[in-house]
Length: 166
Image (cartoon, rainbow, N blue to C red; front, side, top):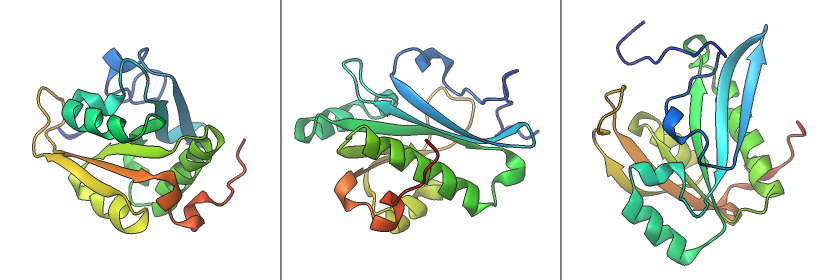
């Protein structure tokens, strides 16, 4: 295991931020293969205590809230190392998250991602970069993070079309 890898907990779920676990009203989606969790993604409503993205981007999130109060934060996107090269897994997780976002009538999506993956969200999903940190302070993984947002209406239609997993 490399120094950039967080081990899964006994549940099989990687919980990078246990201190945030009970603060947000979240929907957690996971994909299993052969009784093994291979990917997760979470969708959290922006509530009075904020959203997970506030941890690194409090000023930017306050500014986003001034323009829209019906915001969700997509976060905790984790894939098993053996499945990281499988674009179909990320596609499946993202499409399922978008279905939850549509079902719950969120109007704006914010996400904080590793800079190595920002091209996917910009080019494929039409997210706009809001801010960037080159090194997350006090974290286990030495990496940067990019805050992005997109109004639900701006997502390409392909991504909003039905995935019936509910």
